[in-house]
Amino acid sequence: MTDVLNQLFIGGAWVDAADGATMPVDDPATGEILCHVADAGPKDAKLAEEAAVQAQQDWARTAPRARSEILRRAYELILERTDELAHLMTSEMGKPLAEARGEVAYAAEFFRWFSEEAVRIDGGCGTLPDGRNRMLLSRRPVGPCLLITPWNFPLAMGTRKIGPAIAAGCTMILKPAPQTPLSSLALAGILKEAGLPDGVLNVVTTSRAGEVCEPLLRGGRIRKLSFTGSTGVGRILLAQCADTVVRTSMELGGNAPFIVFDDADLDVAVDGAMVAKMRNMGEACTAANRFFVHRSVADEFGRRLAERMRALVVGPGTRDGVDVGPLIDRTGRGKVEELVADAVERGARVLVGGRTPEGPGCFYPPTVLTDVSPESRLMDTEIFGPVAAILTFDDEDEVLRRANDTPWGLVGYVFTQGLDRGLRVSEGLEVGMVGLNTGLVSNPAAPFGGVKQSGLGREGGQVGIDEFLEYQYVAVPVR
Ligand code: NAP
Image (cartoon, rainbow, N blue to C red):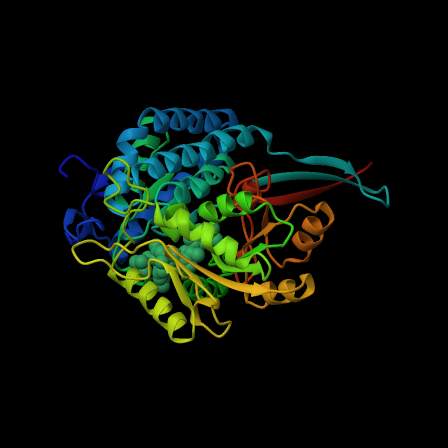
């Protein structure tokens, strides 16, 4: 890989790290090094911060229509380059090309959505109840932001933050995950081409996340953190934000229940399970983690799911016909292996998969476990791999209680043909999102986010831009 963008993007220029450091980017399908990118340190972070701070005032004054049109142009450029971006994503992250193309479309849609929202930032004017003052209400950008993204959706996690930040008039520093920096750098190139002014977006790739981000969060000039990643890291960052009262949006981990009632259409439930479990090889915060299936249909559901999983083709994501690519790295795969071994030790039966293949790359086969013990570690750990763990239940109250018995609350899935039951159970789930007879909830026009330890705030939808705006109220006496 020679022609990829591999430097830092600061103040509109491509630059090396101040100390010249670089870091490798691996191909998870082969374990080989794809290329090297700049490895930023605290000095580079300071330069990026300075660029974002300097650009903030002019950017906030830029006409909403101008901001909107930059996003719209970038949306079109992303779509024009779908194949190029999909190949880049597959090579650094592993997902099959068809899924990578799907992510490119999903990622682009955040720019289209927020190009439309940029020109709809509202305000207000009215008389206060005592009649003595008028109230002028306006909304303004929160200020320079730090955006931190994970590796599992290398492009979409960036556009879901950059889109609303640009629309709102904020400048920003993006720190992508070190496993997948190339998609973010390509995105920066596209935004530059689309006319984004220098300094509005700065991209800092680094293997030293803590050293780079902590001074920014504690320094007092960054006014907002938008983070997507694990709950553990989220907690550390929330603590760092406390001292200078930095505003936060946190999209954290999940532990999604997938509930199949005895009156469910099993074809629909199995289709839903294939999406909720296998999208992104199971490496999604929305991945179904605990399958609760009514005792009377559990054997049939398990049999049909195992059949569909067995038919999936595992291999390098760039190869035609492949459904399941490699996991992100050996650490990620090791965790999946341990969770499966623990479940089996506690009595789970393996219907399909469960064995790591020989050879290079971080592959793991689609796996279905049944008779899983509630004490298994995978019940309270994100599996982040292609493993469906099935438990049985007998009644509605019991399954709701068990589904909610977790500190996380991102998403839940419910399969039933009963409308009343579907709504009752959806409303009873302590989650930010529910798929009712569907395994896919993500959509740029819908507010994405969780409750409990799955996060704070929402991304996408009409409320997505609110995370980057604050209110100002001006009191004007009536004379
Ligand atoms: P992670 O380990 O929490 O890392 C996420 C990002 O945070 C990476 O860029 C990482 O860089 C950075 N980071 C780690 N420690 C940091 C620190 N001390 N200061 C600043 N940045 C730091 O998560 P991951 O393994 O990449 O992603 C998987 C997790 O993300 C899962 O828990 C998944 O559920 C969650 N996720 C949530 C959503 C959602 O919308 N709710 C969406 C996608 C993923 P380094 O790798 O260099 O540490």
